[in-house]
Length: 498
Image (cartoon, rainbow, N blue to C red; front, side, top):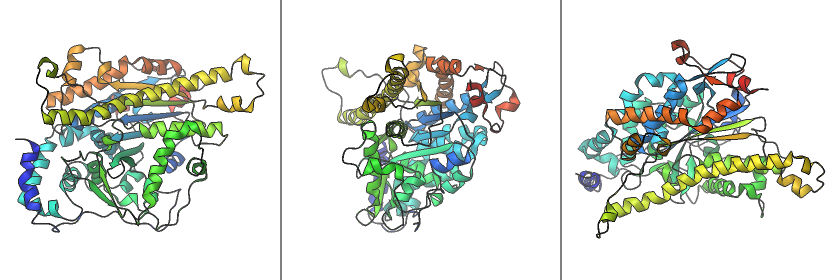
């Protein structure tokens, strides 16, 4: 039986039981404090000074994405490197930011909350569990029909309750802020505008709300709310009711008629965020799956790099000016199952066409995002070489000098995706895995194992090791495999210093 047919009785009953339940409401704030809350700036201020920025970008894709991204965490956890001076580092301890979309947001949020404790039971609590079946059972249960028909509630609120029970245990972003791990940036999509919505206090400042009080389960539910199959997750928008000021570094990008060109795409994202300020005209925001706007969690990374580049050209300091390397693991669980449609004169059915039509643009943008990162890295490298060449030593043209004023950070784009697998049989197997919230134990285990193989075989990962003068420890010790983050200074930074 298909999911829509299963849900039909519950949807019908909801028409007669409206108003029987209410959704959780995110609380308002009256004053914004840019130095507080769960945001990049506060995380940066509380961390040790580092010369590298390490980002993991976890894509969407249901349990397939959750298991594949978990395999990346497992690989980084068990892998130690030794620097040129003999210092060691567990790679997972070098991670600064994890972005998560849809299925990938569960792994990101859970790791941010639990840290190493996650590795004890994540498989049993989530990955090797029929989460999809449990959601369906709850939706069709008469006990939950009031929730289905309540104001601002729906199937995703039922899913959020389940996620809270089996994984998050009532935790909020306040708990995530108090944890000592990397910054977690889960994202959803504002269905009214199609713009990205990141669960960060910076964005919640715009809607004049306190992110600390938001349950992680609702963020995960919003990030994975597949349109039609699951309902949007609704948040109150109090935009315009709190005292706020736009950061000085943002003004040139938001108020200028001709903003800096390197940041044009980032400016569009920033303006979309600022549009949330219209709380009077848009008192509610309805969020759906983050994959609709960015299925690989890369847009925030790309936007930040464009802004940094524009700030450099304008000689405006940025928080990342001291970073020598930007290292991004693009963990993309996109699958490309083969079809036999072209063997028949009859075209595929309506449902197949709709699913393919919905997925094709998302898949195309996923590819473009990775290539944009690589293009940015290549452009920065080329401009630096021109800038530092003997031929430019006598340059007196300020426009040329400005054009060559790019960040000094070396960018490493490590592609962790199925096509990078050398084993064709394994690639074919993984490509056939569906986007659902239930997979076999074997599928989960093979996804986890594939992630580590892909990283180890990555030429970009090997280039990174060579660049920082490090090598992988043959047999990581059991003690270090579960160690807490190394004390300052970070060994990966010591390993990379000249």
